[in-house]
Image (cartoon, rainbow, N blue to C red):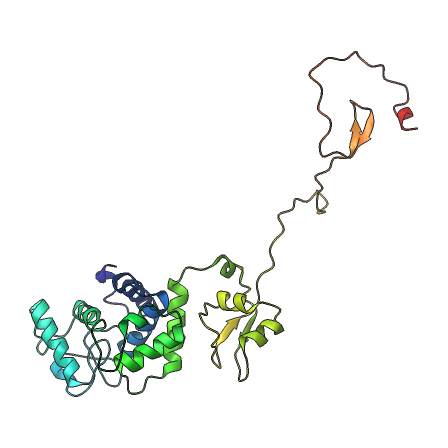
Amino acid sequence: MILLKHLLTETTIDTAVQWAKTFQADLGLTPEAASAMAANIQHESEFIADRVQGTGVQRGTLKDSGKLGYIWAQWTHHSRKTKFKDFVKSNFKTDITKTPALSKHAYAFLKHDVQTYKELKFDFNLFKKSKDIDAATEDFVTKYEGAGTPRLEKRQATAREILNKIKPKSKQTNNINKSVTHIVKSGDTLSALAAKYKITVQQLKQINGLTSDNIKIGQKLYVQLTKPTSNKKKDRWGRPSTSKWYGFDPQTKKYSNTTTPNKKSNTTTPKQTIKDNPWDDMF
C-alpha cells in the first residue's frame, strides 16, 4: 500500500492519482475502476476526511455534520454515517462525534464498505473488473455513493484525466502531435473523426486513453500522430547516403558498385607495372 503520509494534505488531482494507485493495488481494481472511484471522491470531498457538506470547505466532527454529508463520500444517510462511526470506534478506538475523522479512518472504512455494500445493488466484483471508464464512474456514483446531484460528465472527465496518469502508455501514445486537437461537437463519432484526420479508430482511442467508443461534447481529443523521423544516414550535402560503394578498385583495376571494395588478398602477388594511362583498361 502507498504510504498515507504523502496523501493527507494536498487536495489536487495528483492526490486523486495517488489514491487511485492505492485503490488499484489494495482492492485489485482495473485502472478504470480505480480512476472512477478516485474521481468520484475527488468531486465529493477532495479527499478531505473531516469534510462537512456545505458551501466552501467546511470541516468538523460527525456531530457537526448534522443531517448533511460527511467524510470522503459525503454520505447523508444516517445508517451509513452510523456504520462509519461504529467502525472507527471499533478499529481505531476513536469517537468521531467528538474528534474529526482522519484519512486513515476514511480509507479503512471505504476499503471495508465498498466490498460489502449491497443496498443500491452495487456489485463490487463486477465493478473491480470494469474496462469502461465512463460506465465505471457512473456505476460508482449511482450505485455506491448515491449522490443527489452527481454532475456525471465532470466526474467522468476527471476519471479520464486520472486514468491517463496511471495507465501504462502504449508506444503509440508517445507519437502524439499535441498541436493538432479536435473539440467534440454534436454528431461527432470516433469513426467519422478517424476518417477526417486519416487515422484509425484504434489509434484515436490509444492516444486519448479511451477505453470505449463513447465521446462527450466539449471533450478535447488529440487527432494526429507525429511523423516518424528517418534513421537513414545522410551525406555532407544532406542527401540520403547509399550503402553501395562506387569507385576504382586497385585490385581489379575496374570501377565497382559492390557494397564494399574488394579486400586485399592475404597472398602476395607480383608487383604490377602501372601504365602511363590508368584509364586504358576502360576501353
